[in-house]
Amino acid sequence: MRPTLRDIELIDAIEALPTEAFTDDVFRLVRDGRHPTDCWHPKGRWDDGEFDVLYTSTSAEGATAEVGYHLSQQPFVPDFISYRMFRIPVDGIQVVNLLDRSLLGSLGVDLATWGKSEYVSRGDEYVRSQEIAAVATFHEREGLLVPSARSSEANLVILTQECVDNHCGEPEDFGLVDF
Image (cartoon, rainbow, N blue to C red; front, top):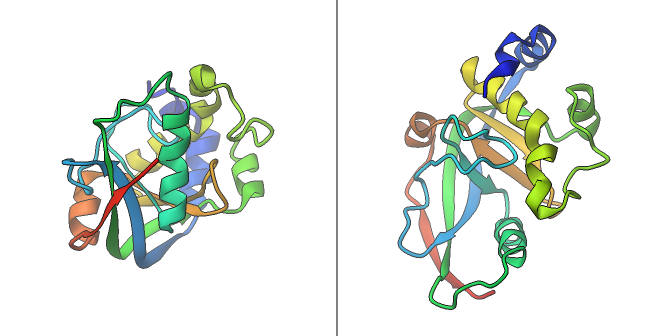
């Protein structure tokens, strides 16, 4: 799904946005045994399944809220699945800062539905943010600093494995998290 690459207004808007260097620690909660800096394409809010991303939060609480929400929407969570929290240092990644919700609105994100869709229909809510990320990736942006739909924390979405490899340091294991 790449219809946005023909959306000239969106392309122009994304290209006009400045990038800024992001250097700080981020947090990621992953299934135990999975490497915390391996990108994937889960068809989330900021990826349409066509490219790999790394979803992180600027706080451990934010990372827990994100995963906790998704687990709470499952009919049951098997007790043999465990999750591990990691802190990942990030150095100098160039991001498009989309924390201003009015900016998201001007890019076509429906803020009235932000984080409110039923779990099974959340894909409908994600369409515009996925288009924004697709354009940003195509135009070689390294990451997006975005508001979380699950907490007051910010999320850093790193848009390619190459950017992760170039800007992320060695993860620090904070241990298992109970839900």
